[in-house]
Length: 120
Length: 111
Image (tube, rainbow over all chains, first blue to last red; front, side, top):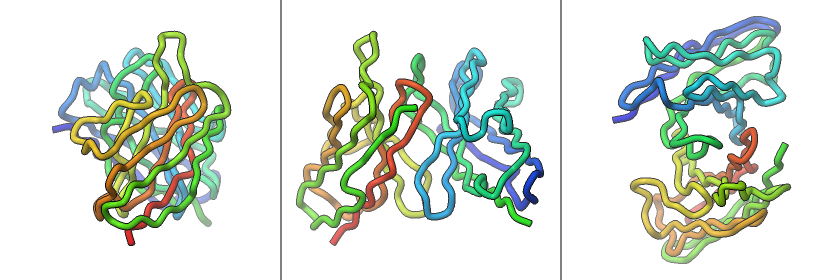
């Protein structure tokens, strides 16, 4: 069974940093493209960042220069380092895996999400 | 950035009746490899999204055959042939041709 479990969310002040983690199991992690998608309270889904199996990285314009996606294949773990956080980054952050690439399509497994609140 | 526009934004449907949701992209989602990079997702209340349809018209594993996706180029439709109570939630289209973008979502309520 495919599982994705996010952690690392919390309350942080504007300008602060957080690192989210997503531990994966049940599939070939090292060859899979993985992604972060967020959902602000009461809002729709917003794409954040993707890392492919061969480490190509893509980011939404809204997080470029502030967020960094990475992976540790030895730990089956995906990360999102978030710096210079803003109030508008407040959201539930989901990690998900793509079914296939290239282009990468079909986010066929999702975690339950981890909540990030940016507030003073 | 490819902009995705869904309509309607909300829908109230009687169980057993059909429903359809439209999704339009600001540019064609047809790749040179012949595939069309359009996914559909359903987010049920309190749950993460789940993949319903990929590559425009292929149902994901375990998705009931009452769900179907169609369309080409910039115009796409998700149809539910006979709505059931468990189909309530918010439906999103997402393009995967370039850096991914979602539609605004369509909230489906069951009467």
